Length: 247
Image (cartoon, rainbow, N blue to C red; front, top):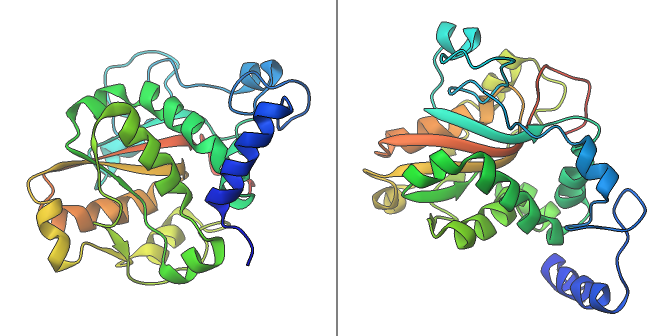
């Protein structure tokens, strides 16, 4: 029987202790598999952002962006650690598709820095769930792999299965904003037996990438139906504009 992804991650850690690892982009790794050059190219969102969706502002305007003002989100606020582009994409996709679970704690630390105000107000952390059929094929949920060490790092309670994806959906890649919203409409729910876990709570929802926010809104809607008083979102990276990138 082939070892699972966590067993492979543990074995990789043992090997790294014996043989100094190379960065995922080549050269010597500083931390978490990234070289000095890779670190310098990632566009971390350290400046002012829209409180509604986390989109970066050139100047601190003290307001939400035009899109959030025109169409308020189902979630209350969002933060992203960096922009999703050709530089940040590699560690995210390595975690998501290449069993690089060793990258999850690094990405959790990125979120802990960017979303500190939201974390400070949260009662619990919950990952965006995968449908069981997708989980069976991938063998792990990358959002959960980030949320778990984030909970351990911050001391905020972890709710791994309060929110479920009850309907298998097609990939969001290549869809317009309205197409993404239709694709995930009604896909998420909090089972009745788990509603007490979120009722009256402030939930911080964790995912790897935000594009239009449709998935986060679908999750926030389900959590609020179950009684959550506030739902915020924290992701590793957000797309600045609709790109032709693989997520």
